[in-house]
Image (cartoon, rainbow, N blue to C red):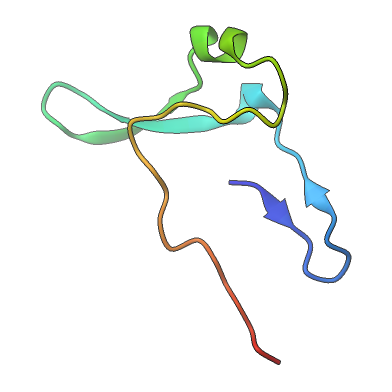
Length: 65
């Protein structure tokens, strides 16, 4: 999950080798996995999305003040 600094709007980059994706085993138990080598090779640009069978939810924090 990438981070944007709320004071400077600086984008904090995470190297692809450090990113984990969510997945399931044959019993449908959720677990984190390192990004597969085929997915790393598929991406041509650091801004390309990482394919994953799961999606994070509830990650935004917003303050009106």
